[in-house]
Amino acid sequence: MKNRLLLILILLWITLSCTPILIAQETFAPPKGIIAQIGKGGVGDVHHSADGTRIGIISRTGIWIYDATTLQLTSVIRNAPRMNNSGFPPDINVIARSDTFDYLHIWDPDTSSRPLQDIEFVAGICFTYNPETGKIAIGSGESTTRIWDAKTGKLETTLQRTDEKDTLIHSIAFSPDGTRLAAGDGPDTISIWDTATAERKHELKGHTNDVKNMAFSPDGSTLASISGDSNIFLWDTQTWQQIGTLTGDMTGIERIAYSQDGELLAAGCADGRIHLWDTNTGKLHKMLTAHQSRISGVVFVKDSRTLVSCSEHGTLRKWDVNTGENTLSVANDYDTFSKFALSHDGKTLAALSEFSTPYLFDITVPTSPKLIKRIDTRRVGNIAFSPDGETIATEETDQTAYLWDMNIDIPKHLNDLLTEIDTTLWGMKIDRPKLSFKGHTAEIACIAFSPDGKTIATGGFDNTLRLWDTTTGKPKIIKEHNGWVESIAFSPDGKTIASGSGDATIRLWDTNTGEEKRIISEHGSGIVDLAFSPDGKTIAAAAYDPNIYLWDVDTGDRQPFPHTHTRGIVTLAVSRQLLVIADTAGVMKIYDLNTKKLLRLLDIGNMKVEGLEFTMDGKILVSVCGGVITLWDMTPP
Image (cartoon, rainbow, N blue to C red; front, side, top):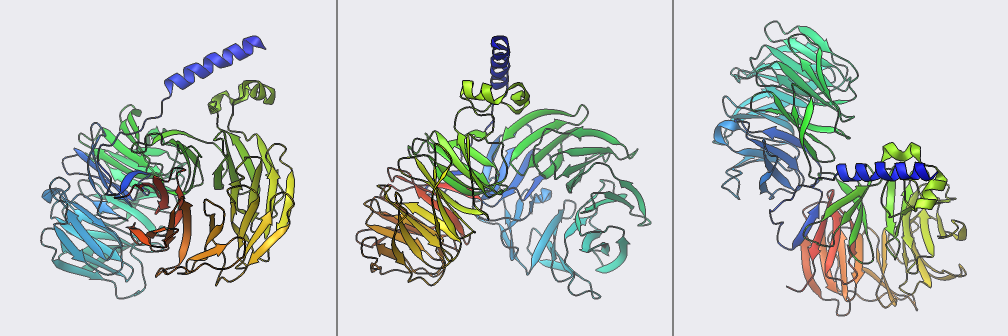
């Protein structure tokens, strides 16, 4: 046993010392009032400049420009909160991007903080550009593709299908010389257009799903296309006949790209793998496997022997396509986040990604959050910190809540060397929970620790509030609502717990006896968030309507509040004398809780705020909106 433990310790030390977490150190200041942001709102697309020296990554928070050789961040365009697609029109050295596909904006990433051109259009879904002519094409949901001059912003050509008015244009691609445009405009159809005459020349059939991405070979002789059937179709551009199919173990192909010499075709898949195909032989050249999540973009740069890829979790990787070696990796955290929790000392932040993976960040230095680790677990819906910061609680899709030790993880490949007894002796977590809470008969909607950490409360879609002992995992109290329990909050002294329900009531319970103290029912709709004031005398509630609800805990009387929002209030937070309210449009208003005076307004930009929380000292407000966690400076201006 001693020898076995010694072996494990040696292996663990080697592994931890040789597998650092790489985080790009960005020196570009965030917008005014923001201390830092975690996540960039997902990766919408990845493109390279014509000379291959720069990579542009598109996210909800901006356009992030990297040096293609070093993968160092060189510039940021932050003016757009949400972008669905982008590209470098190479001949004019600008970036094109769209926020709602009502406008396309042209930027110079080096010299301009304002758009050089604004192109207005209707119902855009996808767009592409042609490096030879400097034209931008925009595909819409009305069987129409429009072609614009990127320099002048002038609409030049409209390609209109007349046989199917409701056809969506899912993907488009220019031929290298710009004379033809391919449009994926049906469940199994690609239309080929003559861009000079606006004639629909050919219709290509064969795919069984919407055509999601297309690419012409550099010499224009071949068109490659992909759809949900996980095959790559190759088309001869002289005869427009299908001349080949690249197929294999490709799960959900997302992106394809030709090398500049046309000899390789890269296919990025949903399982994180990248397939490199030899276009001369049609055989698989290399399989690149370092990514752990869906490939968001693949681009060849410079001499066609280098590939840069990005995954949905935001890891940039540079590859030598001859050897298949991953020569450079930088984790930039483009993941999208849905929920978060703060440790009581304000030093650690736990965040849930869009795909329900828990991340832990060190925010001891608020301006420079650092990723500590990801927890390997099932899909997580909610997360909470224990008061001492030593444990986190998660709610998972199996209707069970779990407690996790915050100690260091043991790498997955060492799991089979350890037993449960070894885990107990070491006091280390192997991505296994130390305690589980089973009893809910439907999904758990909310989770919270009591101030002393001895109790954990869960509310669920089975209409129950349940209090559990954090030592034994056994239920202490079970109470019922007439609707699902979507929000819960402990009073500062821990003697009362408030539960908010879809039945439009707040119920106050004694946490020791389970006795119902009070029902507050004057709400227009279900309660989506709750918070006690620091003195425990007031409870604030959000009910997805424009009203701000403040209630006296002792009497149940509603306290007057002279303000409302224009949109539904979805979340709130209280700290010392501050109350912050956020709505579905991304507007956050900060009030003095005593005077009810509006102190400040923060506008994230037409996106629903999913969560709010103050650090214990009240100096930092944390929000999550549009997949991005933002740390706001709350010190008086």
